[in-house]
Length: 271
Image (cartoon, rainbow, N blue to C red; front, top):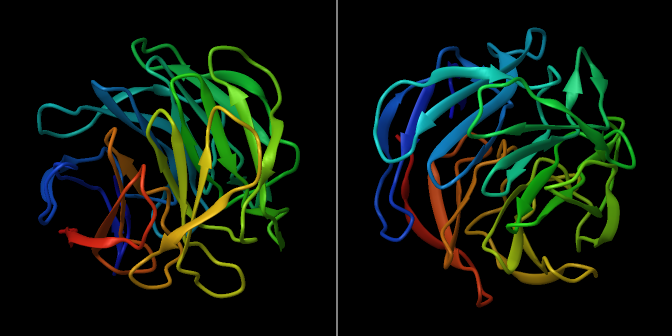
């Protein structure tokens, strides 16, 4: 969904995770949006919040929705509880949760939740432990994982925190990433979570992995094709593959096999 290249985008793109090849045009969002978040069930995909236009001055809490199996323009689904961008979203089969981010120049610690089968507006879920933006996220069917980015827009952190998606409440500590980076990307299957790249002072190529059902520090998985930051949450996955797209003004799509370790391979290009 959306993003920023030579100008802000309202483009929606898609590809088949289990094949390789270039992305294809899916349709358009209702607005040109950058620094947004996204999550999905097996049926619907949602663009969550972000900035309207190329600069972080006009924030939105709109939830745009598409039906994944078809193509076409997004429809306005409802509103999330908070206006913000640069956070991170993840989901169970029924609920989407979004943590952290920034609104009106102020970094946030809020978590909000919405039900993906209902058009009711989102609600407050709880808080992450610190105000943070540039997060990455992933989830199992029960747990949502947040790789925190920075603290109050300045000091980068390596903290990993989690929630139980079916409940509400504040995050609990999960462990630490191998790098102190913000603007990373995340994805997962039901067992493992991955964090790709980010900025730890400069762009990094590190890929971390965790076992979602346990607690503990992340371990090194491998490397990206090139050091990359500013992903905007562009992580995708099937039960077997983890895919990351774009970031830092590039159009590269790259993938790994989630249950192995190793470097990414080239998948194709964004439009």
